Length: 192
Image (cartoon, rainbow, N blue to C red; front, side):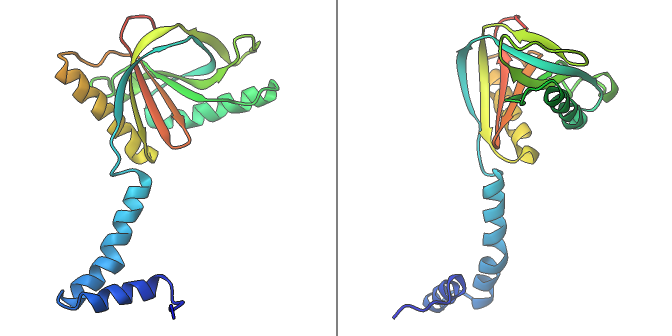
């Protein structure tokens, strides 16, 4: 007859079956190491980015410009979302167009656009600005992870791929973060 103690029963059963292992080590693994690894896996720390080359259609977007630390772009994106709501539109897919490489550009000189994809015929009023990203061929890095890990993993995969092919990072890059999936696009032609 199965015991209804759940997960702790299972841990006890494993500990009982593997008595040759030192019991304190097993308890430490079960109580601390495995849960921490589980959380890190859930957040995507153990995930790797995929790289592919795609041909993409034009996309129209509404945005605001920003200058300074890229870590503050979420505040500006919230302003865009609020302005879209005030104009009667629901924000769709968020995007960020990063103009300057943070490895070589001082924080106060970093420029970006942040906003949301909109329909091609959507009229936009101030303070928002509308623009269209043309059809283009891009190198795409995609990773499913918490933002804390996603940006580093995506850009690292992009830089590794470029290094293997004797190329370097070309700015601007376009970032989309949807449902815990970060997509970073680098245009292969100078069309942005």
